[in-house]
Length: 382
Ligand code: HCA
Ligand code: CU
Image (cartoon, rainbow, N blue to C red):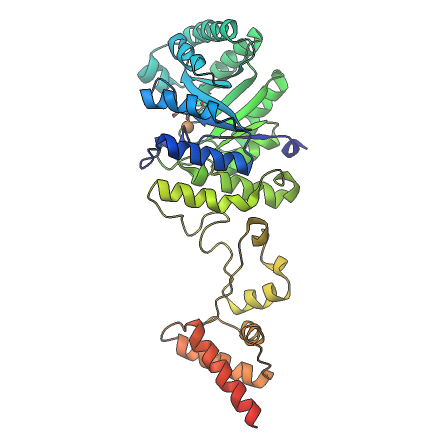
């Protein structure tokens, strides 16, 4: 089963730093990386050492931190960038070059032949310098590239026998799951290398695409916490976890799921943003069951409307009851929680009163508790 064997490359400290409001200090990077490491991601990707002096120093600081996660840095396909990256002592290099007509023309100006030659030169140089380093080669904007072009590039690189992993990148978030599946499947079939998928979320397919990549045999998926990254970001860590958990919980039990909320809150705080209400697992409404029919069924058995168990993530389900959609089963549950044993006729009458009053404005829990305790007192006097 392809989902049994995969690694997460968390790129919050690289792609995530490209998010509009993200600038992490050294201490913050260590804090974020420490928590990602505790969570259990296998690799952490960091901004290129060529980006700024602090970026370079931060890679050294993270390598020195001695985490279980391997530290990678992301560089252009350049000999100078590679030399500088190797000097940091980093565990792996992620090398990228654009292959779409748009990037070939407007970014680096090289044609496919030149890209292949440059890749051979840079990758051979890295291998001479660092025979044991984990080396990945990726084509940027894979899905707007001519298929024949990217395959030529990938196969030439694979033939060199120098890299451990090939990267597939949906740089502008246009790929559909079936396209991702087809591309990854070809690389798995044609080469013996590990395959990584990096997917942007411009049109909402980042999680589905990551899942399709795994299904096709990808071994590595790029994520960031909350999905932060260029524009509206990439596959969110929590979203990937939710997707895999709902296929089979066993696929994600290697991670410390209880730390996901801390990670999401940490990145939200560091980026001065809120966690979106509909966020996977940690969004404020992710485990709220509201309508009476839902509440009744969930109280009887949570699996009726819950495919993710909040307790697996250290979270609680909530059943709000002070609104017009409420039902008497949920009201009874509240009464029982207060130690009040009210008869069905009374509970139904209170429920009707709540619905009527909630048509004007929702009731707070203490208003409902008052209705229940007063009814209980009346019941005792009868
Ligand atoms: C970018 C580059 C990249 C690289 C992905 C990769 C992308 O910042 O635009 O190296 O696999 O999305 O293509 O993040
Ligand atoms: Cu990207």
